[in-house]
Length: 387
Image 1 (cartoon, rainbow, N blue to C red):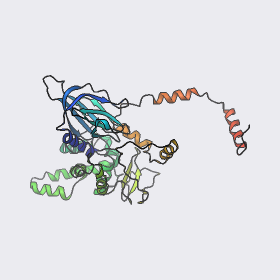
Image 2: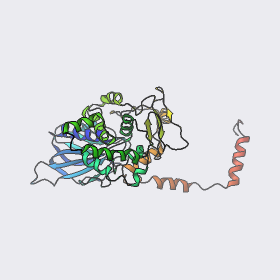
Image 3: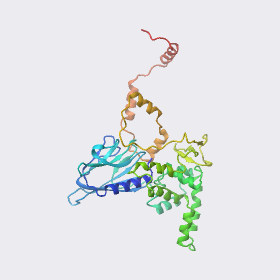
């Protein structure tokens, strides 16, 4: 799932690639896009972007403000597979759910692409109010928000679960939490309050008036704490552009950067939300009972995959079924957690209704008949069909 580095890099990509482009016309939306129609149309407008945690805001601004419409803001959440791509309008990628067309000839399109359709957008400039300060762009506010609220019951949970709480750790996701805890050698199932209360005492020592600014900086660099790594670790990904939207071949560099997440030899467990946490050593006192840490070998290690740009080649129905059976699936519990975290707009229309209709179309078979059918089927195994 895209985390704060991907959102910030997407914003940088949009501002760099689209800064000199002029867009025109209306905004095109696919029928299955998880967001409203965008009521904006202009003969000439620009697009700019800014990211905050796991959200990204686009602003559409008419070049001639006197005659054009007022600016239109849209706030995006990327879900599990959202991204932005700039491509020729005649060669749109699959799953391009929102498209902004340039005025040039032939036109290009800035597309919001989301294969899994967990991403969404909404109109307006407001960030989601339940999300706390961004770990990257609002570091000091983020730090204060955590340390002043340690009496919240949220911190009774294991630190690995609290790191995904966007009210306090806006922008942190699954791979970042694993990398942060690994670097500090903190067991993932240690109580969050136990880990973070120690930082309150450190905060007091850092305010010692006898320490010069250079000494304070040196102390932070030599002994970074968990909250500082929540800022510096995602910043590493951004600075090195390890997940640059313009260069998908940088995936290899990102994989080499990972020290814990999906790395062979590391252990893994599922937390109480069904999310897999990767770690080294003991899991901690709050580890789920009944689970044993699983250490994955190099052969078994899951592989991160980049969504292909080009449409998939045509396959036969049989080959398609075989591919579907062997594909690695995200656990249902993890999908539910992603949906909850991303505040989805609700269940996809028609799913429950179709299921109910299909069920009602088949009358229930009486229990005695079902039993006799099973017995008959067992007796008739291997027999030639009646003519």
